[in-house]
Length: 456
Image (cartoon, rainbow, N blue to C red; front, side, top):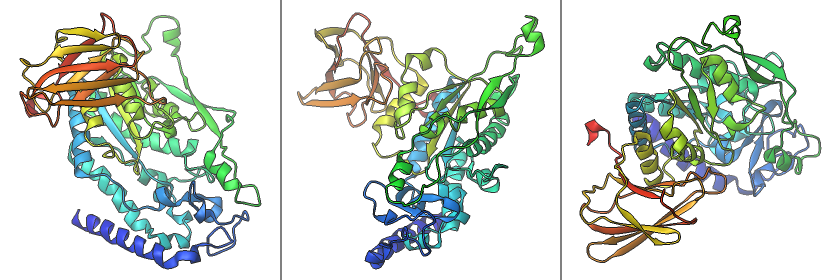
């Protein structure tokens, strides 16, 4: 472990020194590479919106996301995921975490030699990915290594790679290989015991029109047409057993029906790749896809896990896909307090509250036994709200105001879990919550836990 961390520091230092040293040398009229561009590309490494580099076989890589060797996956992030997994497990849901590798980690043989000027080293890149998976599993999180099988099977019979050449997303082939690795892991978990699989066959369908902002940007800097973002595409078709058709058999099997909730980014949301369909195919379990394109690292998980739908009908498995370069510590502890509290779902009955305005309610906290591990759940009672502002008055008269807001890409659930971390026990007198929509008799405030029984 120490060797990996020392390598990260050395790679970061070397990268900074090299970038300063090469300066204008990076400005080549051949796509920035050592050999002429196959597509007549110019100055790709200088594009302000997205710096890129051209590799072999028409494969283009993002310099910042694909070439980097440092990924902000701290020990605190590992602990947060472990806490989430324990909280979910207490209520019968098993978390499967899938760190999605970069193009360069899966296709190192197509990375140009010039990438070394940016500090890229294929061996270090692989080791860092493996380190993340290993640390998560050591903490009890079922993390799946999909990079290794994707490297071993990185091209299908049609010659299509695991990733699109002129886009950063995976192809159906890459999604297929990844889903199989996940399916194998799911089937080996105790939670899979007793599940009678449903059969899903993959049927080829015409590929949908796929817009790629990366390819569009590339094309502006290339003379010839860069590879289009298209590939063989498939959909999952549920196979109804003949006996089930006659009404003599439950197609879910004799046991209780198991479901999967897929949480993820645009990698999980694109029909052209159909990651969700491949997961159904390889696990044999019906799946609901809650992924959000453009939701970044927390968009889909917060949208789903704070919803009434999740609280009322929890899935057997929750698969969370997230690119390894997404920083799960970027916003501090606030999103994790929401995630863990919602995962655990141990909330008090509604505390007495009164309307303090058309959009606001307030409650007396002076007699409540609160700890720094607790959160306040403010539920407006519907999906009409995207923002809640918490105004907390301390016993000393100090007033602190903080807000939680769901962006336009996120699902509006009307439920907000506000962490009391940083507020000493017994220091709060009252709370007023103002929503961006009118409150009514269904608006409630509750106190929720973030620690499981053994941690309390």
